[in-house]
Amino acid sequence: MSTISLIVAVNKVCAGLIAKGFRVTNHKTADETGGMYESVRLDGTNVAIQFSIDFREGGLDCGVGRIIDRRLVIDRSRGGYWQSLFGYLMEKQGLRSTLNIRGVKPGDQESLEVGLRDYLEVIHNRCKSLEDDSILAFK
Image (tube, rainbow, N blue to C red; front, side, top):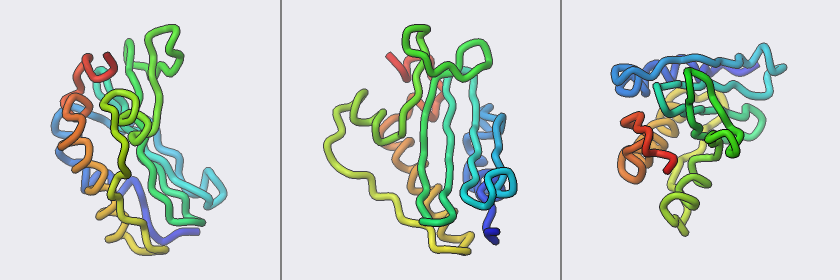
């Protein structure tokens, strides 16, 4: 089992999102996934932001989705949306470069927090509508 905790890091690093009204609504623990990964989803009124870490490879990912009536809706035919942050930036903003997200070192809580900060910086600088929980984020 891992000695690092995504939920602890998200509560610390994402305090600004939480202060804006995002709340943890879905948390899969390492125990629930057999020690393979952990994920934490923050839901606003219109936007969901999910972070997940693969403990085997140290990969940290970020996905974004649309909240409709307090539920994550991914079916686009119903107005929903779900995509990796990278995919979102490619689709919505024409991104054609890579994201500079630092990897997580095994067992290193600080490197996990650094990776989360990298994602939050990308969201803040490239897609503020997600951070602002805007209904326009998926238009």
